[in-house]
Length: 349
Image 1 (cartoon, rainbow, N blue to C red):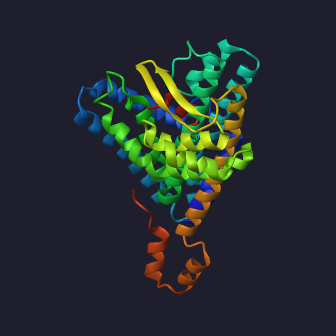
Image 2 (cartoon, one colour):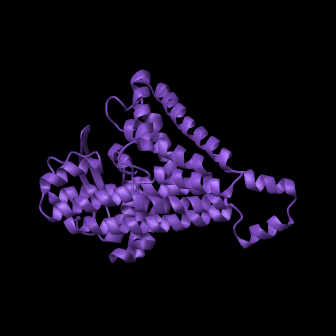
Image 3 (spheres, helix red, strand yellow):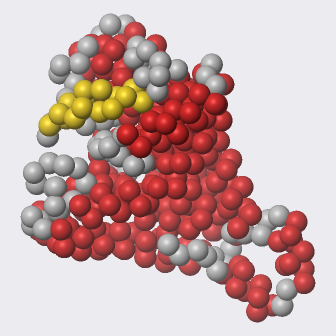
């Protein structure tokens, strides 16, 4: 378990320093396999889609459990395995990099480049968006994906180790691929979308709380972020994007939501927050806030993993007085349950 805490933090550092590999990314490999299986198994059926999701997510969880079990006898091996898995599923550097790059293109009034880049962050139609519309779309995606691509993997990694990391990323990737409201996936992707809602229920609220705590980094107030979360989050069509986007709106002092155009249709989103609509400079502020939330999530995840592993004073006292059999249970027991690739695959509900 102590190897888990160290591995999570090492994986965060690896993502910050290395980012995503340009070729052979594990999430892209999983996505390609999922796409091939979809072509074979697809039917306009919820049960068929549920089996599809269960096979893919179950395979990821079992694979993670097997790898973690093989490495459990060595704290070093356990730490390395957890670090590699964490690096593979995180998308913090890519998310912040794409957001910053788009902010720079908008600041330079290069709308053509910004429109080309927007699909790497979200699934909206950029063709009819002006500079402020592009900034709003990217800002809302940065907010949601801060939870999906950073906070949620770390929460699952802290409580469930490598199976949690890989299982969560499998759920989130399937939601991005088939969990939206297109005619093809409205029924087949239902189970994937619901699984993603369940997997993100707690992490999204952790992300919202961390956003409120980090509000002073961008000149905001924690109380304003908490008020926006409390009053506006439930109005969002997504039960998990709502808390995070509302907290971002409050922390930044901006109003999010409104008309939202996707390839599969138009949504009239309710507004979140009480400030003016976001402008181009607010996108870079959102990226700064996302980075601060990511740091907070890493510290929190490392602390939770350490505490679950008996790293505290109480755990050490119990370890000194425990029988050998109990020690084996403590050492061997475990909780059961983007990267750029995540941003490319990710859709917003």
